[in-house]
Image (tube, rainbow, N blue to C red; front, side):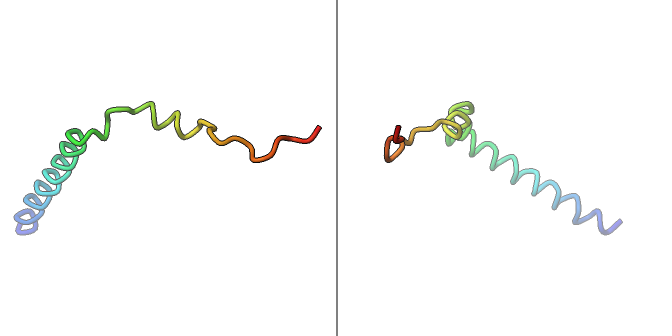
Length: 54
């Protein structure tokens, strides 16, 4: 029973910390453009340095 005396407050503190981190990420704009970063990962912007020889 004494283990619950420190496990419950630790669990509540960790849950509050996770909630605070999630709210901070929402307010800082981390989730504004969810699809853009996925498209940027597969987009090929680099041009070849030399054209292929025929």
